[in-house]
Image (cartoon, rainbow, N blue to C red; front, top):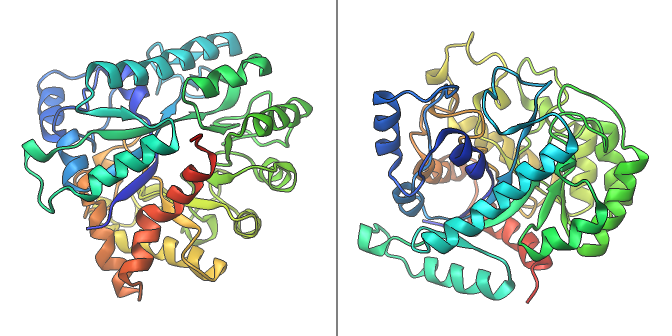
Length: 367
């Protein structure tokens, strides 16, 4: 099996909102939540430490995320919502501090990856893991912190402090905000957004275009000099029935590829077939559609160097919303068969599963 780097998981949000303990097996989490329902939790988990190890998911981008209260009142009936940027700042620091605390208190389960040396040593350990690991073989999950929605940044002079504390990637938008338009709230890049980009580039952050409205994303691709990704964003034109501004337009895809960016494909049913419920539900959606998204990006790029995986697992979706072949994070390995059916070889699949996002991460981490 190839190692996997997953470019988007909402770990801290689920831990702080719903008390999920990802050191448990996903099946233990499901059992506990079935026996003791958690208010506001509407989906079953896909994540657990044993499943990370069985699926060789060695490294994830762990988000700092909170939703603006106006956007999703019923989805966020807990403290991980904000009314003002100042509230967002407080919540996002809580999330980043949580990742540090997890790594300190459970180093056998969680490991923050802050430098190239951390990354090299971590992946060397995972490469040596046996093919069918037993509990005694389990290794820590590597986490690279990323900010989803930049409203947690209230003072640009604070950006070096975010970096010093491990933040390596920033997405300007979730919904629309003071920096740019976002999902279901369209709008261009603002002057404040342009200032933020300038300051991010000085520090060296990766810029994540996911959730950004098209005009804002296109301007970012023109003006941002640093590394750019779309951590969890499928191609809109391939999705039956799709009509919102959340996914990548063909123009953004083309320019992102020209800039050398990497796109994380999302195995979420609605991002594969918007009409999936009416078309037969979960059993009618296959990982084949994920492989076809990956293949399309490779065909547009003319290579296999600009696509990876950004699962968004447990990020507002769960077992009920993913292709029927998936029962946990470990099953991402099943993508191998579908990619092989489309003509991809072992070396190309290795790039897709980890190599491409690894290249981006290596380019920004300090020594």
